[in-house]
Image 1 (tube, rainbow, N blue to C red):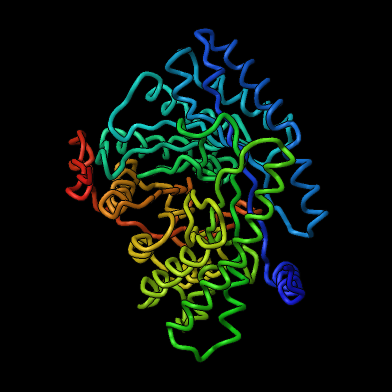
Image 2 (tube, helix red, strand yellow):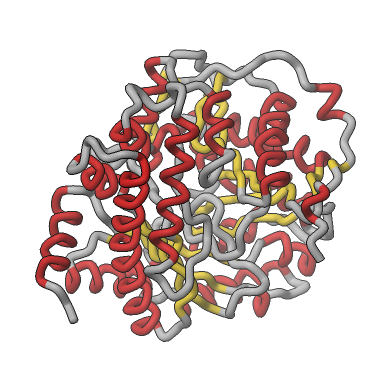
Length: 451
């Protein structure tokens, strides 16, 4: 039975506590679009996306109006494009332009899947796709790119890690006239999930249905507000409050996912129950940690507080949805979180502390602005460090660094919108060149042997 109190509570969450559905993401398989002729393949891609996702934005807007639930983004994720490159050959940027044209036709905010999976090595199409990423991101507005360079089962492909350091630098240079926006649409993964609805890392895995709806929820402000009502509770009570709040948030996501899937005539996939912040005041994961009792995010105790938060979110959210997937945790993207931005500006939150925090939450070193003269091998080494955390701990980790060309520590970079703004953060300049240049693979850890 629908409870009046629950209805009023949900309205309060939406009106005053920044509860929203961050994204409805339609996953579309492009395997049926493979063709030896790249131009024919691009035509098939355009036709399939504009057919499957024709009503995606309209359905999302209809649900917003009918249920009063904000749905911030409508997105598409597609099969990793490197797989199509393996069949067609040719210039992969043609695929990026076809995806951009299709995204504009259906009106979505982003389309992810300009991606390659190279955790155990390069297959046909992978290297060409990776080399094309800087140009593809510079020539498009809606395309997002990701590369999976490691996994717990495979270890780390250090040749790919080295290649991605150079790719991130090249993407920054290619878009330096637009605040290096290309790097904000490029993420490097270890243990990338196949059903993630969040950008920039969304792609449609080969084990997924032909078409599917995945939903990503949010609501850091709701969690903070719930904690503020019990300022003196012990940490067991804090965990319990977060679990109950995460359950309520995820139920909203499940409702939207079911309605959207039904109206679009495609299967419901998963709800990603992540706490995804925004630069808006009152919508910050950092502020949740501060509500627990930290003076500032980044202070001693931050990692422990974040571990409690992430675990409680998972425990509460998993009971509220029939299928949970994606990343599902607490995101800590620096430029996208008002509290993180403030802590970084104060110098309390540093990259080293963020790396420790990523060991206990989703997803990784995300949306961190570094000096423009940061070398490719330093970027590669940061990727390797973060990927090692994911590999050893059997969790998804990722790196989204933005080398701010022409800017130094203390300067600011401003993207606007959900991507936010933030200070240029210091990164060690000690050279890892010899280590990165060795190449090869870091073997999978012993805990990968679970068969």
